[in-house]
Image 1 (cartoon, each protein chain N blue to C red):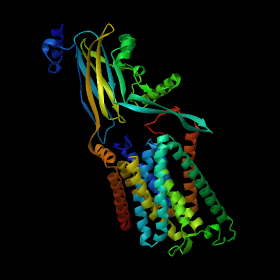
Image 2: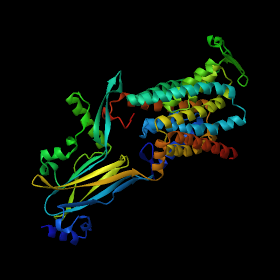
Image 3: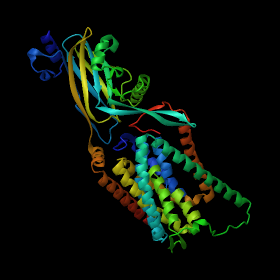
Length: 306
Length: 250
């Protein structure tokens, strides 16, 4: 059964889309990640114009993050003050990001920048995760007792505009979360991701937030940043395809539930290792597409192709 | 001659008589489409439109279908630092979004060069405007790339399609519009040729438009883009909340 996507202006099999949403949803439930960083490249691989893939994925992430944040809110795992500062940065960053996106699209370099951003982030994060997972697996076999210092003071703690974040038990400069939010906002706009994969490590290692509140707080911020991206993309580029978003969402919700039920079946480090391999696989495909000689070095401007 | 053609057409069961302005001064060529409007609905996967007609005697028929004229941008990649990057582009004005030619035999045998140029028969004969001052060699390279890419998308006909004659006077041909067909007003030109001269011609418009929910979504997204964005967010918020609510109970 084919469905015509009104904004992407293409006809796709409904079950393909539901399956794609379900598959990525399953992985995101299984691994506890957002999935935007997998979904956007996959949409591009099946022929959705990158411009539409990025903007529509932002719309889908709004929904995914809402259902995620509700669970964390119930357990009081959201630091709203920290979330607010991150969000202020995120709104600025994503607004700049959408502007940059429109500019790059006009210059004909959008696809390249999207692909390069993905290669860089998927490559770095996939490698780091793989190394971390491998180390954990090895350490479990040969236990060693080198304890890490809990809290280290660096020049970051000397920055001005200090704020107290009770929930996170932190007294740090507002510039730090603002900067993290800003950076992630730009990524959200250009890559069609929530940015959790960058924000969560930054919150833990850079800001020093307690792990328990990290996920809830980042989801809280992601809702508003991706909503901002959705709005600005709809206004500036008319690239948000609600039909596509609805299809992915339906599949995604069901997949995520199944995935989260299967989480306990494998030890965490093996799961992370698998996810890392998957991330590197997508990264490898993107690199291949950039490096391999295209079938035709000419392309039509109105029709954007990766 | 005219009379026999009309009798012939009527005898073959084609209700084309009504289309002719007056039976006494009948056209040498009459043609029509099976549909004058193609609607791109939610389930649209492309469609065939049948063109049929009658001539007043022996002759060759050439059909040209063209979509609305547009400005098209062609980009070229080169390898920079190991990766393929767009680094050259050229714009063409007046490029038909869709272009297909059909004929009952090889175009070159029917239509002399001068006529092909005048009526723009064949993608090589389209009068498009390239950027001023561009190197003609480059223009040719970019133009052939545009045609090649359009052919790949099934928007330009790679070769001349068949016009079939059923007997000496009735003819028919099918034009396929793929799922990615651009919307707008199309022009279907039918030429009747004898000994290298056009003896009859007819132009019929064809409207390709989006219809149904898809059309409304597209219109809404372009006309009220701010409201569309807000609604997209509202739908996502509601869906997310609903999912969170449903699966908490589960």
